[in-house]
Image (tube, rainbow, N blue to C red; front, side, top):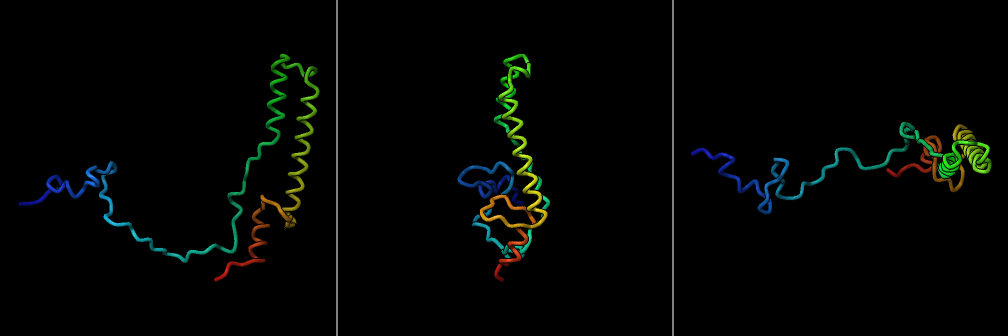
Length: 130
């Protein structure tokens, strides 16, 4: 007599429940085998560094609320317009300063957002142990 999977259904059940994906689970935990050595590289790429910074979101929402309340009359919201312009100017100045520092490769102590050039400079200075 030929045995079919229908006759051997008990071996496909785990805790008396049939798996939903149709696969038979492993009976024991699958051992991890590393193919390459587990270590960090000595450089990073700059591919994923394109961040979309949202600047002055709070000031913009206050400005739009004021404009909506005053039927989009700009003469009624000078304080909000000035705060938004000041915030935008401050943001653009800091972006320009960051770009200059990134181009020159200047390391700023305590900086949390480092560019790939600055990270590579730090990784060259402190290489990973082999």
